[in-house]
Image 1 (spheres, rainbow, N blue to C red):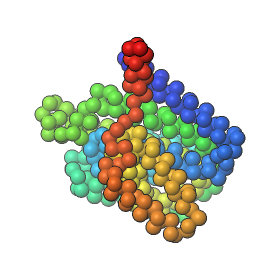
Image 2: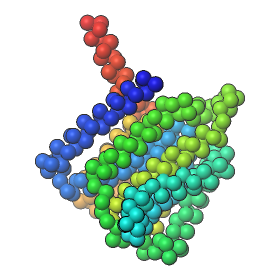
Image 3: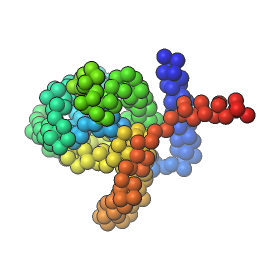
Image 4: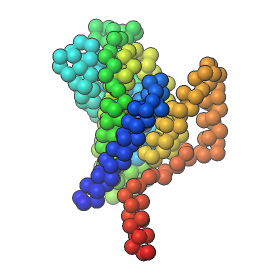
Length: 319
């Protein structure tokens, strides 16, 4: 329990230092309004990637349905922000979206998570497309293909940063808990974990639900930042975008997800002046990195601040 509190204290301290640095850079206009758009996108991508990395890297479940949960959060936030502002607007919509995403994840997860590999990927992709089709055709609630616009842009970078920190600490606390260890054991060897008494389906579903909740939170923040959502924002390509971040950073490395989101976000911004050519350059850069770093930028390496502090104390004691 003491290590649990110490770990959270260290993470919160690092988060406060990060916030202070970003506040300094934005207040001095080193990060101007244009680059703040990139900053917010990077932080939302981190929220998406952290959740998917839990499902893919820790639970070992290859899901292509992340876009469905992002869409649920985005549309829930958009509906409440534009039609029920008196009930809390976007923030109530975020809560509702997270609950709906969790329920949907349970309903989808119990039957599909019994599958493995490509079969699971195809099943989750199918569910994602079903959700998108429902959103497209349920015009009375979602406004159909035209989507929902005029959403109040209340998701500023400090608020997005706050939710990024909260979701990250939530996922990391799960990862370092006994339940997280059981989930990771499933990824390492499902048959061995089951033979040791681990309830495989239970922990797969828990990881899937947590990933869905973080995706819904990120989706609501996306709606509150962009100001408009359409069904076309949440196609198969959206799931692939998040998957690229996870694979690029290193499957199973949450630190890698952070680094990959930052690197790809900056790379995408720098290539904006090149128009359509930027997609070719972007793809070539990804291919080259995956050739020379097939395990991702960081592989399975994880930054452990507590371990660094312990090592420093040990060195001082030795001196």
